[in-house]
Image (cartoon, rainbow, N blue to C red; front, top):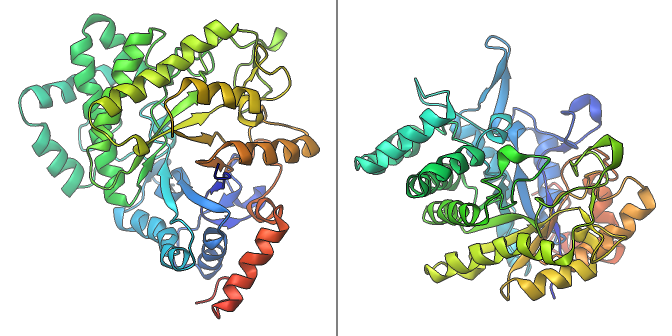
Length: 413
């Protein structure tokens, strides 16, 4: 099995004084910044890196006049993404896989904290947004809308949340499916045009306690239907190579956290005592979505699955799924063959707050995830990007020699 590599955030490594609360790098507004260009080339040329995850600070800037974040010009966003893609010719020439460029492609409410660029007079109410999209499809105007408003003008409207679509589905499943596919189509069209080729979505969890608004429903069939429709819409768009279903084996299980009642893996260790039969019900959602997508003619290689950091005590009482060989084996036995697994961000508290345990689990996690290991946030920032890459000393030395053998020093062309 291919050992997992890192999925990192572009920018300049920095301390908390120069970055947002949750991210370990600083993205300058000047895409020609020598420091950023040097660091981007060094980090993303490394064979231990497989992907770049672009977030709000690569696509938005704070407007002091409006007192809110607004979208950067589309040309600036494209330059930010191309700065990472520029290392791919070097990587391919040296036998390494190209970097994929990813985006956490969830709609509202998460989208409000990431990239959004509303057309004039776009509805604020999510049900009105959903109704507008439905009417566009039903009237035959959606193709023109996505070509003109989304493609030519470059808008990326705030889209109705998964939970909103689930509520619509409770009354009219057919209508909700149409809207879900339209949401996926818009997302794929926007991101593909920017140079993003992988979407970390959709959430396939059944009513997760920590983030119910990001979930379609507690109902299995509604979730399967809407997630599948979203995937088809996204994968139909030019430039989108892969999607990533999350967070297996299912974040909708009951999380046991004593009196604190905190179920968010970002902030605290989370575990569940759900029996294997119940875990299997949640995991079956992922399997059935994959089956429906592939049976519709989509390439199985276009589908990946993201694992979470919950400890499922019925299978492994010590390690979160992302570093547990027992739970990963369970996933492989119950998912279609050949699906690459990606680990959710390892700098979440539920992965580990202890430095030594973090290193131990990281090594296990890399061995278990052929699709990559996300390392972007620093809620408990155990390591920066350079330190992560230096863990594999032999590999790092080989990479340094590789640059020297080609007459290239880090950050220089």
